[in-house]
Amino acid sequence: MRKRLENLFLKTICIDFETANAARASACSVGIAVITDDVITFTTEQLIKPPPACARFDPFNVAIHGIHETDVADAPEFGDLAPRLMPLLTGNLLVAHNAAFDLSVLRALCDTYGLPYPTCKYLCSCKTAARLWPQLENHKLNTLCDFIGHRFHHHNAAADAEAAAHLLLAMQRECAAATPLELAMRLEVRPGSLFPGGYTPCSTRRSSTTCRRKMH
Image (tube, rainbow, N blue to C red):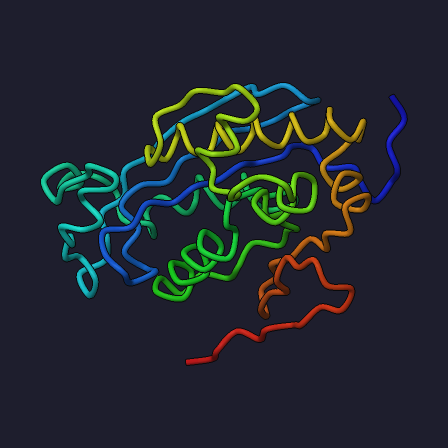
């Protein structure tokens, strides 16, 4: 299958974060699902110990994802996890459902630990699905997975990442799109990007806004 040069990525990485509280840097779990040549080849979850400044576990968040402070007591902090995670993200295409949230968590973690943002493009599967299936009642991940016939354990980071991967592949099939970026182009979704100096958001508008990283 021929692919346009601008659509060539080694992998598509679907990512999902769960947080201990409302602070974006309070990530307590990250889920990863890897798509290679339109096949989900790897799924994993890694618990994360939030940094001391935002380590409180809000009962509201715990009720959603079921992760308690004791569960992450021996887990690595993001700074220790980054040497393994960041090379996976760099140069690949990231996909997240409600990417504005998950990418803001990633940026907050990088800011907290003094790490450069990875250089990559990213796509919001929620915005993309809303363009493809505007008739649906809503475009939450569980609603969309019910629609495509994929069952999963919602708010488990690995399951959510894998669900986003199944959703992305279903949308590609629906549009006969060879790659996620071809899908985005057909639906007039502008992918976002991360780079060491800041980011651009994923948008359905024809114009895009560059958001510069705050320097401390």
